[in-house]
Image 1 (cartoon, rainbow, N blue to C red):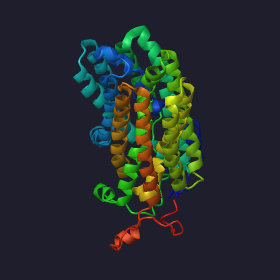
Image 2 (tube, rainbow, N blue to C red; image 1 turned 90 degrees about the horizontal axis):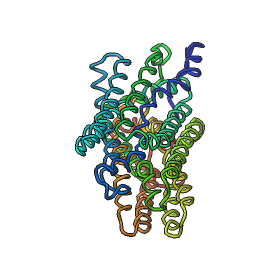
Image 3 (cartoon, one colour; image 1 turned 30 degrees about the horizontal axis):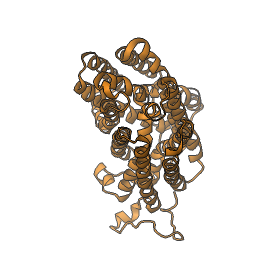
Image 4 (cartoon, rainbow, N blue to C red; image 1 turned 120 degrees about the vertical axis):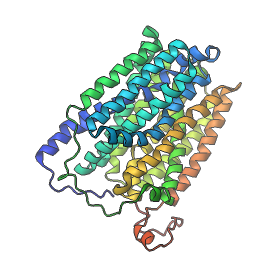
Length: 443
């Protein structure tokens, strides 16, 4: 499945990977995610400043959170620009993390002067651009190491686990910080945290050496225009947009949803967010480990079909529940499948279009990531603003389940790109029949 060659891996490289890259460098290079994955803690405080009459379901918090994710769609472009300007991975990493820190400080200023437009444009959207830039670089570096060592699934799983763990820790700590020092100082302290971990991450920063990073590319490299012109790219992009939307809705709105529907206190809402994000992180680790040994297409059928069934069951049961336990459990289950799909999308991109085209595919798929990050929170927040919140939220879940059925169909139709057929200007068929499979159907 992974076109990797493990020749000439030195003992020094092995030690460096197992004792530094996998446990420590991955932790340092994912710390920047805390204000993004922990944005659920900011929703109510932002609304209390800009829409105090509707602190739990106001638009400022939901839209600001969604714009952070939407901004990631442009992060790949900034990553290219910073790479050209800095000409050094260390300088590039410091610049991208500095952008995130500056936007956090500007978010604090926006809250002090009560400027919603400043918060949304520079504080949220520009922060998202910095996040996307960081993600593009970190994913490429760490997955290059994982692919080189023959443990791409493991590296991808640990990468995702730490995203969830950082978000969970911050979701628990941030509400306490906001209560103690206010949201403005919480933003500033978070900015200092991001910069501190960025400085630590560059101490031993290095990619696999050219000698040991050689790969056997059995699929040719395509231009970005050629990648986006393939049916495989669009099937996967639309599938990921659908698969990620409900999960992002829960991730950003989880605390407000818990307090709005079930009238729990702030600590309980934070613990629900922690449970959701830890389920997310653990699922990414488990699926990363499995992905080195299990075919991806059946797994994605499970991720999409499972979410469809879970969302339907939650929609049916929600109006009849009085406590938060049922909703918390179902959100964790849905979040686990949502996380699993996120954990392996890089590997699926390689399976569909080859590792030579991974970078262009990642840049394109950030569009799905960003749109899902905006549509999920905004649409779920709309459901929370209804006069009959339980019924409207249930219908939101029915709609998400219906869309997930379409994603399941797209996964079924997917085939790996046939480069030989493309070179001969032949048609690229879709996988339709159960009994008819060739090497392009089995991935």
